[in-house]
Image (cartoon, rainbow, N blue to C red; front, top):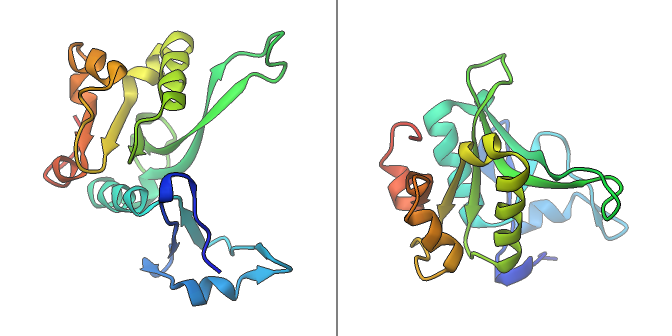
Length: 174
């Protein structure tokens, strides 16, 4: 049974120990009563694009420096959100092995949605240090007609937007 995510992307399941991709048949063996229960050494990526960005990041920085699904608070607790609001950025890159100082946050975006625009504006307003560490990797092109992206391209944040092909050519993130 294959799980489809929004916008037609298909998940990728990876064995982090062997760095191999699992087939849908192998994944079915981890289903119990219709629910997927993955072992700790298995990872689910929401799309092939996210998986490819992960592979590039571990090429650049090594597996121990790349953290998946890193939580960021984008709205502080208050009346509207009594627990605040968190967003899980696809990846965080640490300064060096053993230390957890984050040098980059990386989001793999196949499609720029209105909801993601709201997340970006909330992050910029709430935590500009995290916003300045954010890098966005698009699948095939940077959607320069999008109003939010157009504003970023005209600002000093233009170096934070990449395509996957541009990322592949880099030794390290700028």
